[in-house]
Length: 62
Image 1 (cartoon, helix red, strand yellow):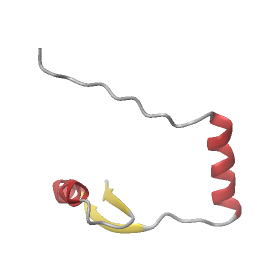
Image 2: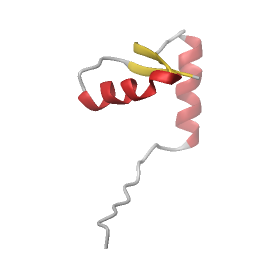
Image 3: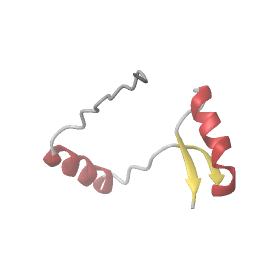
Image 4: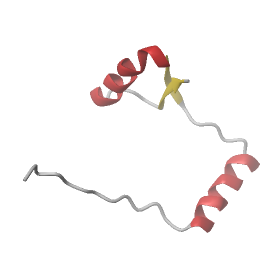
């Protein structure tokens, strides 16, 4: 027994997802990018996410 846990995530129906994407395009909405890391520094990005002090998306460039 390793105490493994499986947790699902509800994301909603596909038509709602498609409507959301149409709204993004129509209204030219862009995500808030908080910080960007090159792939070689991906661990720094994960540490920033773990700290929970960021605002916006944390991007790792491939």
